[in-house]
Image (cartoon, rainbow, N blue to C red; front, side):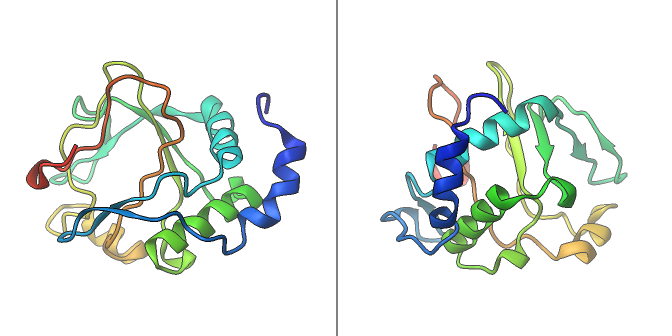
Length: 173
C-alpha cells in the first residue's frame, strides 16, 4: 500500500492499541446522545484505512425493508467496503479497540468495519441505522448480531468541501 509510512505505523501500533487517553468529547445532543471526539483515531491508522479500502470499494447497496432484497438504490449513491474476518489485521484490531473505548462497549459487540467513500454529488439520503424489525430481512440481521444500539462514525479525512452527517430531528449538521 503506497502512501503509508510503514515504519511509523509499525512503531506506533502497540501504542495505538493501548488505552490512550481519549480527547475531550463535545456533546452535541444529550438525548439521544451525540458526541464529537476530534482526533480520537491516530492519523496513521486513518491513512492506512484510506489506502487499504480504496481498491476494494464498490457501489453501496441497501436492504429493501419490504422484500429483503439487497440492491443499488438512488437514496444511497456512495461506495463502500465491509472488512470481513479474512481482511482483519493488527491495524483494524487497534481501530476496533479505539472504537470500543469511544462507544464504551466491548469490541465483540461491534459489527464488521464499513468504509464509505463519497465523491462529489454522492449521498446517503436520510435514513436510520437501526434494523427495521418489521422488514423482510430484519429477523436475520437481528439474529446475526442483535439490534444496533449505537453508531460510531470516523471521518478518515477532512480535506473536502461540503458533505456532512445530519441529524434533522435534532437540527444537527
